[in-house]
Length: 74
Image (cartoon, rainbow, N blue to C red; front, side, top):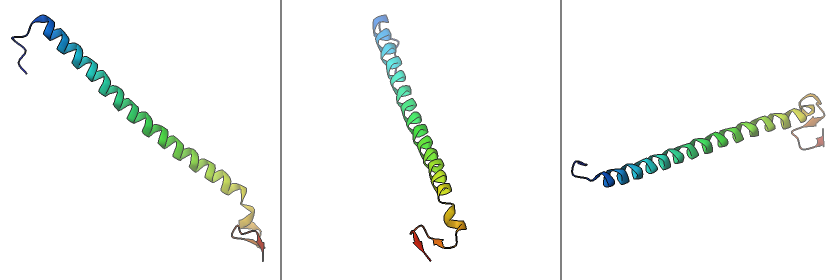
């Protein structure tokens, strides 16, 4: 874009508009990154809670009369 014939006011308006758009696009990128980070943290939290839940059922592995979490005695 050739801005040589523009007035100072037109240049200022154009520069303000592009600065605002740059800020808006940067904000959108930040939101996407934060959303992805939150999703990854949620997945990791789910994994940790899943491990804790499995630990609560460790007796199923060691008590041979108890099997497959069906709560039936052999």
